[in-house]
Each structure stands twice: as structure tokens, then as C-alpha cells.
Amino acid sequence: MIKRLFDIIFSFLGLVAIAPLLITTAILIKLDSPGPVFYRGARVGKKGKQFRIFKFRTMVPNAEKLGGPSTAGDDPRLTKMAPFFKKYQLDELPQLINVLKGDMSLVGPRPEVQMYVNIMSEEEKKNIYSLRPGMTDWASLWNFHEGEILEGSPDPEKAYLEKIRPEKIRLQLKYVKERSFWVDLRIILQTVVRIFK
Image (cartoon, rainbow, N blue to C red):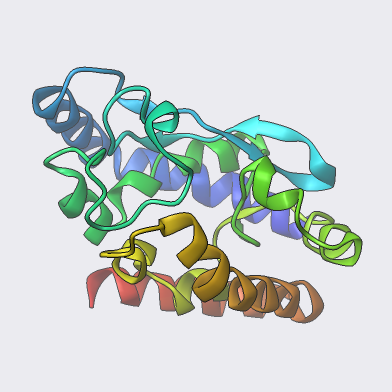
């Protein structure tokens, strides 16, 4: 209950505080390429319930039809402004809307697409999806710029499954086991430091 109240208060205050930044980013996206401002991909949330995530669009329209869900830093589907948005995590900021709605939390295991959830073990699903997915977690801090690891890979999906996913799952399970209000504050603080470092 305290976690949800914290999410509501700080996602609302966050959206109000960064409204000028959100508007500026939206304008830059429209000037950069044709298509919608937001990317609204399907993600798996608490108890396996699907929801539509809010992210600023960093790829060409219909990018999902042109390739898989993993995105390398040199992916040809990326827009011109995408590297800048991703460097400062600007594309992730609209997820505060998902937090306010209750689809997500500020801190929790990052939401996945259904195809990756399908290959989880039952124990992994049971633990990870007992919580709302979050905007940041231990795995996010470990792998802050995923696209850089995948960059140059001839098969980004295979590279994700082999180089990123096992450690990501391990860290998500670690969060589920050790979660607390103070752990959440620590993760939020470290995330802010990483963005501005």
C-alpha cells in the first residue's frame, strides 16, 4: 500500500515537473520523422496481465514488423534523434503515465514482451510477475544502455538471449527476494545518478 501511494505521488509530481521536457521531446520526435509521438507496445505486467507501455518513439513507424523486440545501438530502424533520447533515457520518461495508471511501479522488474515471458520457467514467472513491473531495477542499473551491448551483433535477438537475459533474470529475482522501501529508494537514487553521470 505504501509503495503504491509512493508511486502515485511521485509519478504525478514527476509528470508535472518534467512537462516542459516531455513537450519539447514530443516536438523533436515529430520534426525528426513521420509517425506517432508514442510507442505503445504490448508488455506483460503483474500476474501476467498485458498492458500497453508508454515510451517516446525512437524507431520508424511499424518497426516491430521490420525486426525483433531487441534493439541494437546501430539498428537501422532507429530515428536520427534516437541515440540522444536513449543516452539520457528520455524515451523512458512517459512510463510515469503507466506508473500513475497502476500498470507499473517506479521500481520493479522491467516489463517484457510476451515472447520472452513464454520461455521463462514457471518459478521465474511466479516470482517476477507477482509484482508490478518497474521503470528501473537492479537489472536496469547493470545494463543501463542495452543497445550498446547488442551493437554490431549480426543477430541481436540471439545476443540478447545469451549475453543479457540470464543476468537480467537473476537480478530481477534478487529484487523480488530482497525488495523493500529502502531498496527502492536506493535503486531510484542510483538510477538518477547514472542518467546524469
